[in-house]
Image (tube, rainbow over all chains, first blue to last red):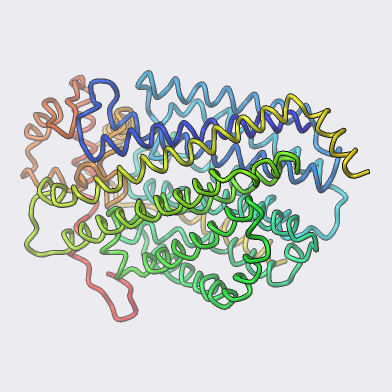
Length: 451
Length: 126
């Protein structure tokens, strides 16, 4: 079983490398338009980057959840189903990349590939859900992370199917209703995969702590239900300016404001988190979890402000939204997944990692680069927001020229992120493939050490 | 129990959105559907937005039709020639007609300029 999951993690890490490569190229093409067009245009680079990043998150999250389940409920997952899931993902990836490189778009934003390739993705997800049911049946009193994984899987499947509704004649010729559904999907689907990721983060904390308290506390369940409530209803803040039914706007605003509870809780727990951080700081994978907490704080603060319609008027349609999307996918999702990719490696490999100096340096350089990247996008977005609300508006071209300096900084910080995260991804792929090859030997040596 | 209540609420909300009726456009439904496919086939959303939703390399196109005094020929010429930021697109006559019809229909759905909203004291906009 572990061998299949090793390959799945390696495939996910390859997607991370792909996202970084195409992201850097797209960033350069954005800052200096037309420079790469004779080879590959922005309209191809952007979906290549976005889809690779989505697949990194989805495949890595799937592998981490299955890995965790295999630890919690040994020998219950079906190896055959996991192999079929992996094969379906590989088929989908080949199809999606073929679709982009041959210019056969046809999907919608974030899912621009030929919609036929949504089939294997949905099927892979369904198989994972069946595997999950096999693993957790007859298990009473699930810890919160198991609830989160179940929620993430079920809702992803439903929302992913909803994302294909536009192909039906009933929805095809509608403009505003269809856009409302599209952004309901885009908002909720992020909530669905966040359930998988935050569930994994909870499990990792329990695993590192060794006490198993995190996953069964009442507060964890309160937070879970609040997260689920937001997954279902808070997406309305994406479409405040859309002339859709007014109740969408009100529900979106009211539900989004419940995120203050998460935010206040982070502030309230700041001191105890600091003590905990000191305790685990030498553990390399913990640093990624710590970084993800800091990024949750920054991005959640930003998201709450953006969810206030009066402020949203200034931020909507600007690079502040890009900063938020990138800040969450890199700062939160990628950090949790990298923590899991390190943590699930056997101790023999982890101690090898912790002895080296360069990964720690890389980690800090990456965080600084991400902060610069995030700030430059926010500043560009702020200026665009002022432009779009000003009465004396200059032309779009002049406004973009005025933002050039921020795009230069954003592209440069992106290159640094490409190098740092790329090196970590390559290094992790090597470790996981080494683990794949030496699994039996490692198992014996660990057993010997334990004896 | 909480889980089932939330799920029921979500299903009802989703149903309401799926069945929401919108004002029919004067552009033929077939042309809108075809135009939407042309928009997606050429991945225009990578750079352009409708109501601020999309990519940010190019401008928002919700009311582009109106901006050129409903002169479809100007937009067609721009799509065919491109500029230093946008590549040229050699669309067929049918594709161009559908895309222009789609843009024309989109223009009639509302005003995408955020300046036309009034801000209320509770932070809501209208």
